[in-house]
View (tube, rainbow, N blue to C red):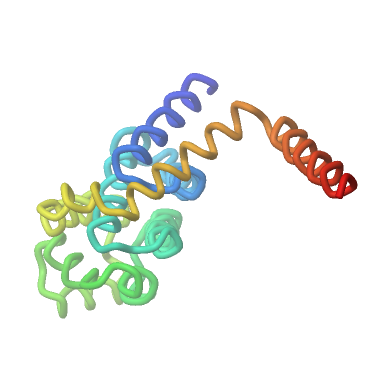
Length: 193
């Protein structure tokens, strides 16, 4: 629905500003994750919470936009399958978020060995896992969030978002015209020499 789309965009803009995330990449990752959550109990606010907690952890850890997208993609794949696979958790997620496997075990209230057994048996429900994993990420990295939000990277990403917004408002045509005008002026000045 149009209203849903507008409120999702408002949520993403607010999160990009709060966390200092690149808006375009953030919107792409979120829309894929939200699409995977459709028809599950995560649809709506719960998937927003998971997304925010992963994004917060990524800022605290100083992950690149690509690393954050990769972590969210692993969660999206788990959600699409209905169960968490060892490959997503041990591979894709752990490569991007250091300590993911231990964090996941704490989230599920089991040892890492027991978690491995559950994964191999296909007994880790992705919906339950995403909620608990998000909450554990918040417990693990929450104390470092305030400093991360003031980091140079977060500030630079906010500036990039502002520039993108200005371009969107003025339109690419305006920008092209402006640049052509400058090029024409430079050409005219060069001809005068």
